[in-house]
Image (cartoon, rainbow, N blue to C red; front, side, top):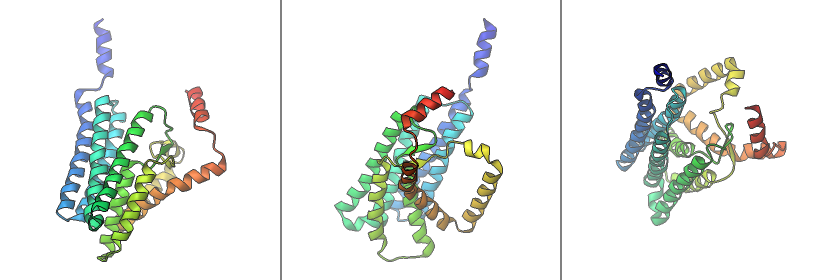
Length: 259
């Protein structure tokens, strides 16, 4: 009897393991909160950087939870609440104060629409997480939407442009991002590691090449990468449509048979 208890305890992660993913989520939340404060102080570049830092912590917390077998319902709910603030409220405030304020109520309504669509995107993801495909996201993920806004701010900072063009660009961008988040366009999910396992050398070279580019021109690289991912959904969905990919139900049945 005692041996059975010892085995159960041995297979169960320690309490410290449960704290680590939630600590990373807290750092993501902190970065998102700082982005709001920085935007209110008109330090828009710092706010944009903070959103990217928040996205890094958000990416790490889930992976750490899976690696340490410390996933919990509490962690999932905490992560979602953190995402609403870091990738919903923070970029909406940044976009409003940076480029939308001159539009008055139409400006803050546009910012609110982005935040609301982001929250809806998260809610849809949470209820579909058990049945969704691992290779695709349905709709633009909210961190990617936030990163796109942050990338545009960093790009303007990089080129040193101080004209009024941003007040024309940002309303179009924020409405498009809001619609993309609640759309049914498919976006490639980087959670599926099958490609990495199949081509480890190619992926290693690609990561090194990407790091060199980021270190050389970080603002430009982040802008191009986030914008490209945002528009990749409609293009990727169109390609899949012409390829006549099997239906989601058929794919799930095949995955269940393989398991």
